Image (cartoon, rainbow, N blue to C red):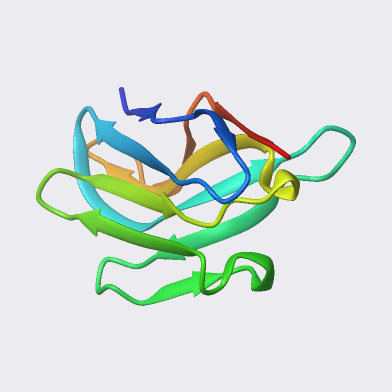
Length: 120
């Protein structure tokens, strides 16, 4: 069974920084894309950033220049460094991975979500 376990959320003042981590564990055969989505109250879940196994990255426009994404392929872990945080970044952040386990084909997996709150 594959699990994604997130850590690093919390409360921070505007202009501050947080680092989110997400580790995929279980009977993993291959990991393709990993990334982070977020969902604010009353809004749809949106992609924040993603990174391929080769290191190519993609960011939503609102976080470009402030957030960076990285991964450790050996540890199946993805990180989201969030700098210059704004109140509008407040949301539940979900880790996502598109991976293949030993007994399934490629499919989407999600973490349980971690709250990020930015105070003004």
